[in-house]
Length: 266
Image (cartoon, rainbow, N blue to C red; front, side, top):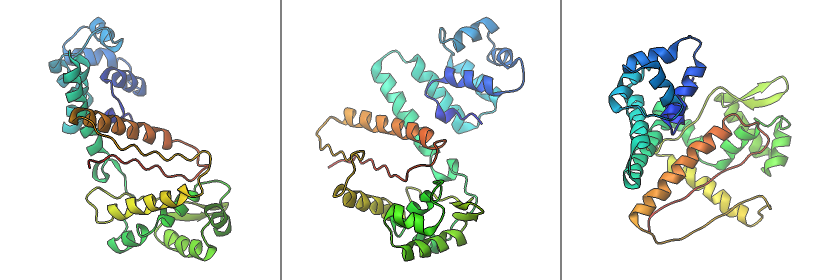
């Protein structure tokens, strides 16, 4: 399913959405809904003309967008039509905020089985739980001994963690070996576990600095800058988070890795 939140240009979304639909003649129906000619719609899709906000609202209703999707689509239209860089920056920050909100578990993460509060406390108590679960997705890591050797975690700890993961359907035992299970995990920004989750992986990163590989990357950049430029940096980082998610989602499981990004006021 094509999601408007994965796009930063409304015309690219419309072209992608039209290609994903099996019904013929949808471009003409979009033009009719927006009360414009088919030739005008073609020019819009070719990025030679722009939708007005009034036309955009009608298209949102025709596609069946909910309130938040409509707000996001209209923001993309406003961004594309903006005549000054200052206005574009203002709208871009609003777009980034909408994208961030849609990444929250309540709106974007499908949870097949929710962990109890007690089990969340266990899962987020150490980095090894998520590391072992991710390792189980790698084809040649099929049992506790292989995972132990790959991650450098004592086998007795791997065995204990795997028992927890299997009991809670975060991992499953298949004929060919271990694999990630149907249950999913997500820790929201307001969760009591979120700080522990971040701290676990940052402590792991600090330890890894002592024995870093040539492909590892550790980057620290203290700075002083204007509020405007701070907000630009924040917006750029949020754009990259969206890009990273698109890459990681379909990627073949070959490595277990962790990406930490920190940006904060002092």
